[in-house]
Length: 376
Image (cartoon, rainbow, N blue to C red; front, top):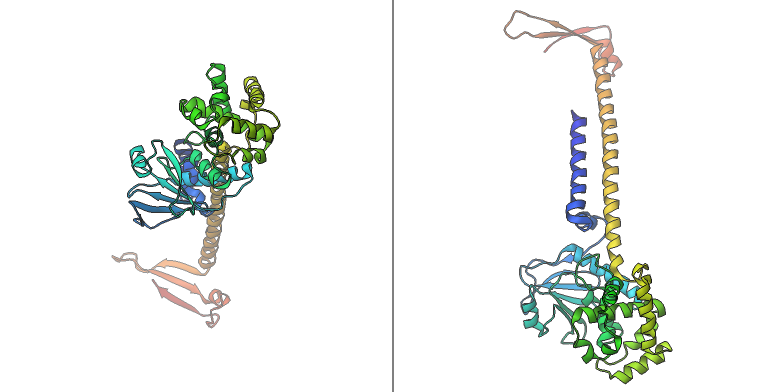
């Protein structure tokens, strides 16, 4: 009976783990269990107001999260933001010198009223100039995180490089998004890829629809980073946001040793061949989902192993207890003789004949050779 109960308990645990992995995804499984293995966000007390209608929600190593009253940010989003920032800083060979103040807005209208920006996300400098303020309608926004990192450590160049770097590291707001090279290759095959000559100045870039412009810039900057490294790219970020076309062309040529249009041809050739879309992207933050997957697999395997160990240990413990009980019964049974005293009485009593020599061997200090009657 006990073994069956243990088996049922183990089955329930395994069923919960499998259901969590299938229904909620690996991130859901990690959210429930991973905080037992590593420190996570330090949640603020509910209602910790910080002014202007904001409440402090949580703090991590590189982020301080604020929400409107009643809103929240999921644990997986905060974990991925830290992983994303770690991948980006290693790829760019920089470090974030200050904490990013992340403001999560409940709607785009709320963000517009608070910042004046018509977009879904924007990075601003705080009033005291000490840190970057990230405003987004999403709890997880790798694109804006990249803006905060780049602006703090490298500069604010023309949009083709600024938005290109942010798009190379994140365009979507869900983990596992499609690689920017794959999207750029699709535009190239459809004849919709935008020539870089039409995107170089800030004004030209903003005059195009977001998706084609951002995708072309993201793929190109990702190509530059992979082929030539972060040091040369950082020199482009020294340009002013509103630099003129000639200045941009000269800076690029002096940095890379050839014109931007020559490098554009190499990028297009590589893109058309499919090499870029199939190459591993170790420096880009799509890989930030791997630790979650590994965590989920480890947790599932650990749950199964723990269930097996629990069954084995439980069976051994039960067997040990049963052996001790049987031994005690045998020992006591040799020294007790049970005989009925009054079988015909309404409440029959049992008379026990006790061998006191046996009790003496059991370290009872009774005189040997005697006997006694015990009425139960």
